[in-house]
Length: 363
Length: 163
Image (cartoon, rainbow over all chains, first blue to last red; front, top):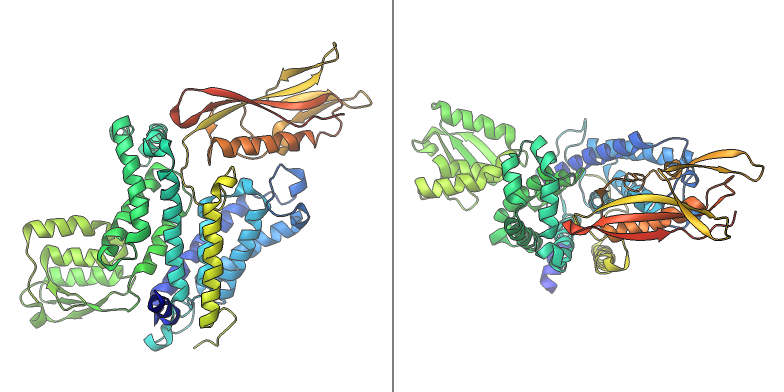
């Protein structure tokens, strides 16, 4: 335990992915700030409306200060997006946001609170070493920085799953499927509007299936709280978590929480870049096509892409993993999907297909 | 390379920050039950319940007691000079759940959360009725469908008002 803590204190690595997460967080903060501003009535003070302050009433801002803080939130978010004064802006937006949240608990939402907590934690990480507007790209050495705060952000994600899953586990209505069944029955119109077949929603809301789904949801959240941290389960946990959040997105209204969760998932990627290779045969159109696709979708900079017909050994493309194992065909595609955010949902289906139809090529 | 700032904590600072942060988070999660609306505790989708609020206004009766007059959210009352004035529940209550009267709405964060907020809202509104010399209190009859169960009802009353 002590060695784990010591490692956590001193761990340093590439902050490229961390910086990308910061930029995405900035966009989410911006959207959140714009939404707040759009519903704000500039001349209304807390004295004029029913509210439940968490902090003493004397500390509530007047209309002008409140409006100014909302505008400041948007400015801070823009700075976070572009990477200039990003860390002080993250801290400022977290402090101001938590203050505003404390002014009226009627405006409290878990997803908004979570966004502010991640902003607070990232402020203490060197998340401004890449993706900075009009600054030349930093070298790998310049990007290297401490990751302790990023690890704390991972832990925060785990706390959310643990708190959510734990509270459901302790609630008999949840365990028995009453909550999810009733929710699904009433969410049918919303889900259908988002493209989910009505028949599927009816089946899901059936008491027996709802009970099973409830248990699955509880197990999922508790599994994610732990599974994201274990090397053996991490990739599957990430995939299962992505599926879980996308399902929630189409069946419920959770504001920005889905995209916040998926952005934070990127922090679970190994920080070191380009440890995998895509070797392709430029003479084969399929290999060249895949290389171009990977180049465009490799947002986490996982791959070193090279045209090398000899190394491709007669295949259109070959994926070389960190440990030197090679894969082509369906398994190669599965490994591309595993490392590219947009294709990640396809990882498990492709992996299953690959196992069924094509054995891996030896390294 | 950027110069270190106050955000670049040393090893001891990191440990201290993490200890304080995690203690606060754990405390907030573990004490969720002490807060009716469970704020700061990440109890996602805790209920699928619905509530429907019917608002009433308690006024003095000729026999010296009080009666409850059902409202649709708006009412008229005389001030001390006898002038008729208009009042609306939604003038002060802007909350997207509590301002809806007479029809079922999703009880976000659960029934306990919404009843807690509604009680506060009733007390707040009766404290802000300048010019209403008739209303001695507000009453909310709440129909509740908790997690798809059969409906039950409860009544909340504001604190008494002496116009």
